[in-house]
Image (cartoon, rainbow, N blue to C red; front, side, top):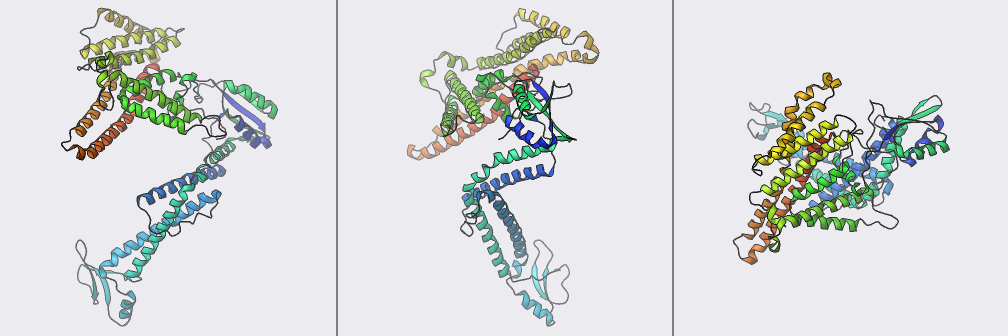
Length: 584
C-alpha cells in the first residue's frame, strides 16, 4: 500500500533549533524538502562531498591507467605514505592539480618542439650574437602544405614566407624539459595508483559527509520568526505517535494536517512482506507512483518475473544468474557485529533469486539450455506445446499474458470505484480487452473465427464505456473523451499486440545462441586445432547474447509494466520517494 502522509509544521524555541534538528534526525521519520537550501555552509558541505567523490574517481582512474600501461618511473610512488587518512582527499586533489598543470606545460613544450624540430638543434644564443654583429639571421615558414621551414641570412624574406621568432633555448634542452615533465607526471600517476589501495579511507567518510550536507540543508530551511523557529515536512501517519511522544519531551509544538489539493506528498510504498524487495527495483529504475495512485508492487513483481524469464528465454543463462546470486548471498553474509545484510543488498539478491529461478523454470518448460536442448526432455508436453513450429502456441501465450495483465488493471480500477457509477466503465473496458484479445488471435490465424458471444460482450462493454466514463455533470469539461473512444479502442488492440515482443525477443535470443553453437561446432578443422577457436566463439557469442538479454529486460519488461499496464491502471509514475531526514 501507499502509506498516508500528514503535513507537519514543527515549532521550537529559536535557540533550540539546531538541537531540534538533531532530535528530528534521530527519529528518522520526517521527510523535509531541502531543495531550497543555498547557504554558504550548505555549499561548503556539498563541495566537501564532491571533492571526496572526485578524489575517488582520480584514484580509480590512476589505478586503471597504471594497470593498462605500467609506469617505469617509480619516482614519488610513496608520497602519500605519510598522509593521514583524514587528509587523503586534499592530498589527492592537490597531486591531481599539480599533474594537470604539468600536463598543460607538457603540451606547450610539445608544441614548441613541433615548431622548431625542422630547424634542427641549433643554439639560439649564437643566432642572437650573429644578429648583434650585423648578420641578419631569420627563421621562416614557407607557403604550401605542409609549410617549408628554413633559416635565412638576409634582410628580406622571399615572397610568401613569414618570419618565426627565435626559440628561447636549444631544441635538445626543450626535449630534456619535456622528458622531465613527463617523468614527473608518470611519478604522480604511479603514486596515485599506489594510494588507490587506501580508497576506503575516503569512501568510508561518504555517509558522514552526506549527513553533513543534509544537516546543513535542514539548517538552511529552518525558518525563524522572533523567538520561534519552525520547519515543515511530511510524516507517515503510523509514525505520528513516536513524533508526538518526542515533542512532549522536547517541548515542541506540532501542527499536523492533511495534504491540500495543491500539495504533492512524497510516496512511501509498503508492499506485502513477500513482495517488499520490488521497492528496490523501483528505486533502481528511478520511478515512484504518485501519492494518490495505486501501489502496483504485487502485479509488477509477478509479471516482471515472467517477462524476465521469457525475454532471457534460456534456462542456461538463468542458471548462471542464479549461481552468481547464490555466490552473492554467500559473499554478503553479515559480518561480526551485524544482525543482517543491508536492506538494499538483501532486496536485490532476493529479486535476482526470484528472476533467475523463473528463468530456470522457463528453461525446463521450453527445454532451452544455451541454445541447445536436452534429448530426454524433447517429448515433454510443455516442450512440444511451446515448440510448435508455426509459433502459434507461443503467440497465444503472449496474448493471453497480455490480456490478463491489462484486464487485471481494469478490474482493479472497477473494484476501487465500486461505490461510483464509473466502475461500470472500467468493467466495460475489461470486456473490450477480452474482445480485442479474440480479434488479435483471429488476425494472426490462431482462432479460426470469433465466437458470436464475444460480439455481444463487445457491444455491452462498449455501451458501458460510453455511458459511464463521463458523468452527465462533467459533459462540458470531459465530453471530448467520448470522441476519443474509437481511438482508445484501437489503442487497446495495439496494447495486446505489444505483448508479442515477449515471444519475438525470446526467440531471437534462442536463435542467436543456436547460430553461435552451429558456428563453433561447424569449424572444419582437426579436433585438437579447433578447441581454442570453438571455445572463443562460444564465450563471445553467448556473452554477447547474455548482454543483449539484459538490455531487452530493461527495455521491454519495464515498458510492459510502466506503459501498457500502467496506462490502463492509471499509474503515471509521477511521484517522488519518501526520503526521511536521518543519519546515513
